[in-house]
Image 1 (cartoon, helix red, strand yellow):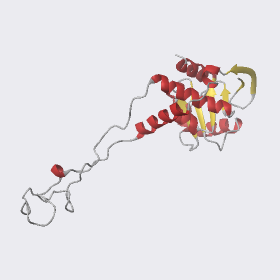
Image 2: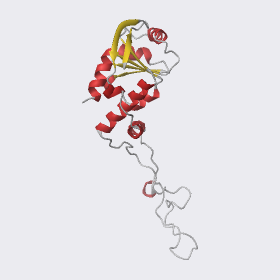
Image 3: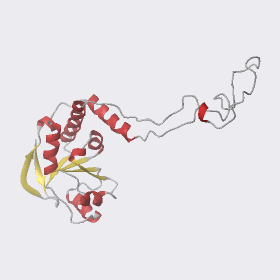
Image 4: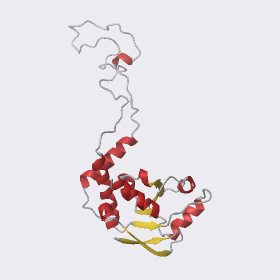
Amino acid sequence: MEISVLNIKGQDTGRKVVLNDAVYGIEPNDHAVYMDVRLYLANQRQGTAKAKERSEVSGSTRKLGRQKGGGGARRGDINSPVLVGGGRVFGPKPRDYGFKLNTKVRRLARKSALTYKAQENAILVVEDFTFDAPKTKSFIEVLKNLKVDGKKTLFVLPGADKAVYLSARNLERANVMAASALNTYKVLDADVLVLTEGALNVVEQNLNK
């Protein structure tokens, strides 16, 4: 699949790049996509929920009533879970929600996501660019030139670029990331994927290892 290379003014440079079929033209695997998105969302969870159990609640340990003959449940001290204000049974504890997912499955998921974007003609390729200093107005101008303003757009750069990142940080529907950090969730979440020429090479190298 051939795509014309644009500059940041939205003009055709006259050059074309070929999207590698091994990355942008595979048979998508929906289950791999599901697992990779699930892993990404799981890793976003803080996992800091915590409830006090019986041994952690502040209160006397004096046994409130006799063991038998009271007509109700055996409740022990005032920290018993059967009493209001007592500890919680099997409450949440701080934990890591992440899980293991094989590297090959993750690569397959990202190739599948990129293939879906290629099928939707939602990929743009632009020349490598940067800004002299962070300026949101300059980034908005790029969005307008590429005719993607108003759409949820993901810009993929060959590496970290602080000036470009800070220029887009205040824009709700624009996201900037390095090619090495590209993930399935971000690709699918964007309406349009804007790849620089340098990022295109990095993505293909990373996914064809």
